[in-house]
View (spheres, rainbow, N blue to C red):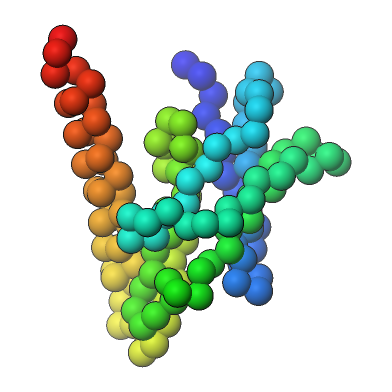
Length: 128
């Protein structure tokens, strides 16, 4: 079984979420990363190779238009395999009684991703 890509969170600063991608040694090319918020793709995601470590730096600018009261969840996936690498949530407005809202938001994002993948699978295998 092939080794999977790992994403390690580093920080959130000045409206940009940052992390480090660690990939198998035999992986080639720039990692294809997709970040979504409420099913919409986040623009401006940057993946750059760090010449010192050889690992890939991921930068996700958080669009101002996505920040509002409540919990906003962002899902980070491998665009090629669809594997969920990580997620993060931003809490705004009134203090939340529980973090369960963040978990529900994440579950909704993941469920939407699974539904799309299942539908695509059904279409691809319908003629077989």
